[in-house]
Structures are given as structure tokens and as C-alpha cells.
Image 1 (cartoon, rainbow, N blue to C red):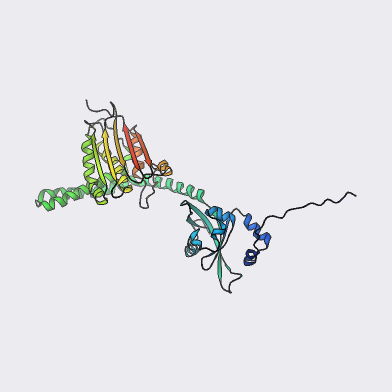
Image 2: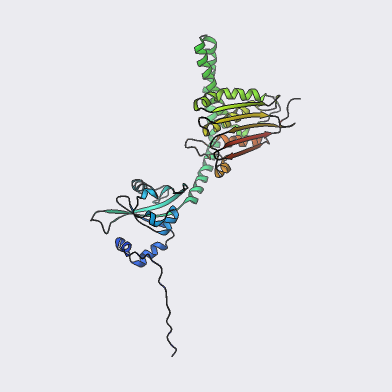
Length: 370
């Protein structure tokens, strides 16, 4: 008979702290399995302190286990009251809830979790604990947002013409009444008020025109305009907004002559670019507007601001329809400008540096009048 051979089998690594096993009623092997999970496991006491966090969970949240246990869960995820509220309400995808977590390094991550209430095995009877099983769902959130964006695009394409038509009719009536009042009232104070009303009406009309401008072209061989005069007109419209926010707008007159451009669309493009810059800028910032004829057969419009600039990620998506970093933003203006420039066989360029500002250049094949 052959000699028996001793085979040594090393046990799977498990947390050495028996108190953790005792507290949660785990056998060491069971706790080892919890540690082996790719999903995060988080246990929170009724007072909001973290009682347990596995390594996978720490990795998802961007924290260290030893720096998290016995500390408030708000430091690594969110306040317990919010987690309980979200957990009970559940999410839009069945019984899984979702929450946006800000990591210590300032980055964001979405986690999807399920919450279970259990009895604390050490504290007095009736004390509750909350167990969270969670995963990183960033990629799924991105896919969902992209899907929602395309759905909005399809919906907007159907309703924009109707919206624009319904708004234009009452605007025309208001403008006609304002014109009549301007002729009938001679008091200078009334004249100023009426002119302010007419200016706002024109600004609204340009915004409405912009809703359907992706179907038009900036170049128009049937008419010629002086871009410098058009810039001055638009600056009169946005001037009050700039003054109110403490932003200075500077216009450089370099566009000599007239060009075959669509007057309405040129105004719409410029007002969209200026509004976009004004929303990014704060008091003390400056916006520079320049029209020029750099060479024969071309026209250039540039809007440059000293605002906060864009991150590389934001810059890549800046012209995507419905993409916006502003809580109340629509994500429409810049995207429509880019589309109408492309439709005009022009070039639309954005350069931006965080902390420095953003520059938008539009180049068109557009000969100056001879």
C-alpha cells in the first residue's frame, strides 16, 4: 500500500475580527462570502453610524473601510433619513432604489440598492439596523439618459412647429398694439416704457424663430445685410440682461460691407450665443463679439467670454441636443446654432478652458459685396 500523502488546504481568507461575526450572527465562512461579493454590503445602525462595510462596497463608494465604520453614513453615501426615504419609495425600475453619491474626490457615482430592516443582535430589543445591498449603476444611468434624450428629440421635432406658430400669433398682436400706443402717446416716459415692451417682444420673437431654425440656412443669396448693424441691434436686446448681471459686452467692428446672410437667422444665432455666454458668466466677466471678413469669400462671427469655461467632457457634448449642465437649461440653443451652421455649409468651432472662458467661432463661405 502506498504511503498516505498529506495535502494541506489553506482556508479562504476571512475577516479576523470575531466581534463582527458575533454582532451580525455570521459564521466566519458566511462573512467570508459577504466579503467575496462583487456587490456592496453596508449595515447602518439606527443612529446613522456605519456598523459594517465590505471591501466591494468601499471600492464603489471610493472610501476605506477602516475610515468609514463607526462614522456617520452621510460621510460616504447620504444621510440615513434620505436613504430610508428613497429605499422605501423605491425606484422607477421595480424594487431597486437609486441615489447619486458624491465621493471624497468630488466625483459622482450612481448606486442602485435594496434596503432591508433587521433587528440589532447586540443592542436592546426593538433597536433596528438597516442593511443595504448595492451596485454601481453609472453605465446604466448613462444609457437611460441617452435614451431619454432621443425620446425628447423625437417629441420636440413633432411639437416645435405647433408651439412656434401658437406663440407667434399673440406676439404679433401685442407688437401691433405697442406700435399704435407708441404713435398715440407723446409723453417721453410712456415712450421709453413702450420701447422697452417692443424690445422684449422682438427678443421673444427671435427666440421663437430659433425653435425652428435648424431647417434654415444662414446664407441667403437673395438678400444682403450689414452684420455690424445686426450685432448692434441684438446687443440692444440683450443689453439690459447683461447690465443686470454685471457682465460687460464688447463689440469689435471688423465686418466691413454687406453679406448674403439671412437677417432673422443671423439675429437668432447671435442672441442664442450671447444668452448662452451670459448664463455662464458672472459679475465682472466680459463677452467679446467680433464680425470680420478674414479673406475673400468668407465671413466670421466670434463670441468669446471670460466665464468658467467647460470641462473636456462637457466640451465634447456641448452641441448635443438637450445636453445641459444647468439645472434650468434646455440644451437646445447651442445645438440648434451648430445645426444651422452645418446646414449652411459653414464651420462651427468651440474652444474652452476651465477657469479661462469659452470661444465660439462660426466661419461661412460668404462673399462681401463688390
